[in-house]
Image (cartoon, rainbow, N blue to C red):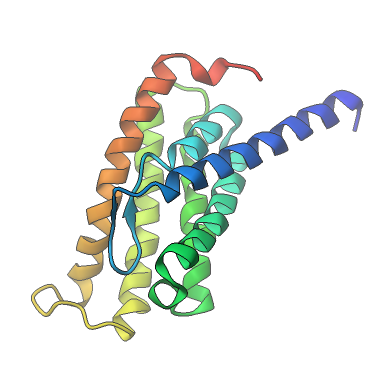
Length: 187
């Protein structure tokens, strides 16, 4: 590896660290939090989505997984571990993996604003399904879901209630950032 490649790799690692941390900071600002996890934030997914659009899906997946670990620690501190961790497998699925898929936004690496929103939609959709299946197969064994919703509908309502709002906020912010040409900006 030559000096130029090393410098480029260092820049990418620094960007991953900065944008994962920025996502974690935005994740801590929560106008609304559900009782068993899940929050509406001030666009906490946007820094990782933006980075993945700028640097590609691989970089985005790494930044998203790091963001997931940071979010796990934040939730333990802010919500208490008893409310958010049922099993180690659940913690891994709902944090580094579910947050890691935010990096799938980078499938539309350096494309138009519409593609950026589509990538964000895909990432949030897959994140929703991860949380949904964990709700069905893990949380249903721990908490009684409201009878009128049942096992299959309640996890969709619960996770959809915050992720749909998170998607709208993220889509608006990403659209504006891409339209402004921020993906071409070099540090």
